[in-house]
Amino acid sequence: MARIYRDEDYRPRPSRRGSRPRTKNRPNHDAAIDGLVTAVDRGRYRVVVSDDTSDVRDSPRTSAATSDVTAVRASHLRKDAVVPGDIVKLVGDTSGSKGSLARLVEITQRRTLLRRSADDTDPTERVIVANVDVMAIVTATEDPEPSYGLIDRALTAAFDAGITPLLIVTKTDLKPADDIIERFSETGVEIVSSGLRPDGTLTDATVFDRLQGQISVLVGHSGVGKSTLMNALVPRAERATGHVNDVTGRGRHTSSSAICIRLDGGGWLVDTPGVRSFGLAHVDRETLISAFPELVGATAECPRGCTHHADAPGCRLDAWVSAGNAGPGGVSRLESLRRLLPTTG
Picture 1 (cartoon, rainbow, N blue to C red):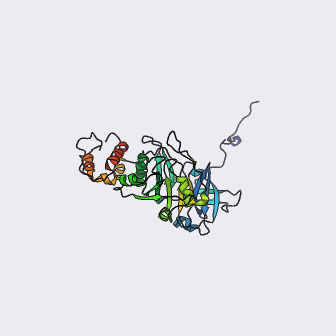
Picture 2 (picture 1 turned 120 degrees about the vertical axis):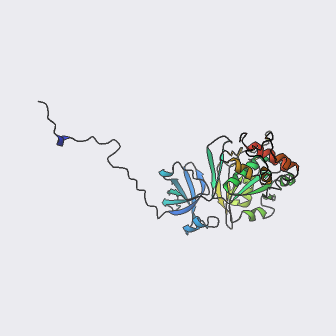
Picture 3 (picture 1 turned 180 degrees about the horizontal axis):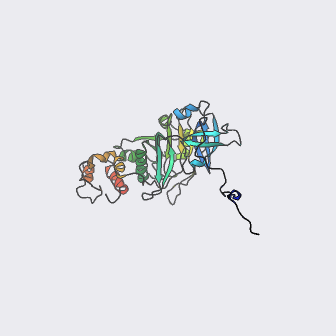
């Protein structure tokens, strides 16, 4: 006999996704503490915290960090880049004891953000460091020779990010810094030399004094002496140093990841891996031009929509440089600007 089904016999099939509805209510993290990200390694974040957590949030340059915490990123932040210099909020085990693991639940608003792309046409941006005050662009006078193209790109990225640039010249014992000083004499960029004694200490305190109390990032080609400078400024850093290839004239990558280390007396210093290129796909035309302050005055006299290239009708840049208005480094700087500018208006 066929079975007769009634309405009350109906039993809905359980959902394969589970019977508990997802909630839109986020956990309350009012008790989260603040910390400064100092290193990133394969999904783990090293974060320094202070007994007075407001120190890190309100004055990260001078806060007295008391412990290192290892943290993982919360799932809702999985698409967000977390970089050295970030001020973050932590929950969970923030004791810093061996084997402990905290959870990073928020990235606080950044004051500055240094970015670069693989090249000038790649729309994908790579975030390098956050909340820095000074970009210390390190260049050698010799072995390897200065890469003026990279320096100009780094200066442009600093200008775009609202970061103060500082040009640090190394290996002045091999060759004086006269050419570098001359080229950037009209840019307004501060230039300091970094000499080293045989024992690896600085010959004077100029660089240290300039970086103390700031959050600074070291940027430059491999082989220019960034890690050596880091070791002189912070001996406990023990960053690996390398040599310059005799054939290519290029340095070997001795720093594989960015790391943020506290300066004695206040401030933080971020050492980055040596870069081969510094793409500026995220920087617009007007910002590019503004990063060459000694040339800006000429653009006011150019025709509307001028591309500022050598073949642009009526462009006033060449006449401006020829008249000496851009200083002794004007010709080289103009060539650099034109390489950075897009070929169309």
